[in-house]
Length: 379
Image (tube, rainbow, N blue to C red):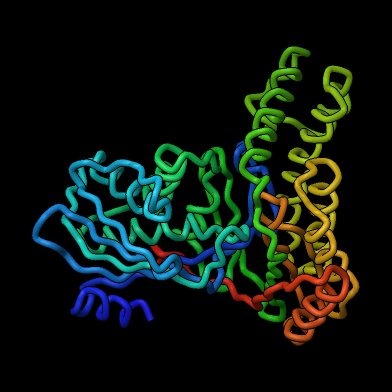
């Protein structure tokens, strides 16, 4: 589709085609910006890029998702308030140039089937896909971890969204049939095999995450304030990554109720994520599902980033045959749930949850039976 669109718009075949996957986080939510642990998987939903060189320094780009075109010059890259979808590409291009990677003008088409504003990281897929595109078109030698860092830099410092590193990292370094256990402090990682008798089912609530950005910033401040209060009491901690459940118990008198609950989610989520990796590697898939369920309860009650629609999807999932674990995924306040389901039951599970959601709330839930796939920088 991308290739045909490119031919139609630019009248020739593209020189380069690349794609970057979206992701779903199996467990480890709102831990990445607290230097914690996450366990995402790249999924077989992609943003694709097609393009060819120009002789000048002009970028002409078309988005198939927005059915819109934009143009900018590599010698003067600024944010575009009218074509905001182009800012991810602009940011990647700007920082590649700033790091000494000389780019050429190009004609580009990009788009894909990662749902936007759903918590599946379509923005990270665009950024990582753009980085991979420039690597191929300009013949750059880019390390995959560098590509993830640069993509995050584009989102943080150009687009202006203060996200953690997880989304870009998994889009760059995912591995087929594996999840990725990532330490967000030092970026050490290892791939963790996923059993072939389970499927990842994503259920999209259809609710746009209108509160996610502002509430994300509130949670970030609350986490930092919790650490500050605990440090005043004498606890050594640079972030909630360094805090244990025992530390929270002993220091709870210096934390307000809301700060205690925010900190408790992050601390226990880190503990759950580390246990989840161990049980996944040992094959104890039922326990992994229990940890996913506990993660949702913590996100709902302590971190308060769920919503009626996400809770409904999770509660419906918990009732279905073949279900192992279910929880909200992503920033919250809308977007998707992630479900680990016995492979034989996956299709029936997806239908039943969608039907139950329609009956309960009168809303449509798109469902995706997914498998873990390779990242854009995995060859």
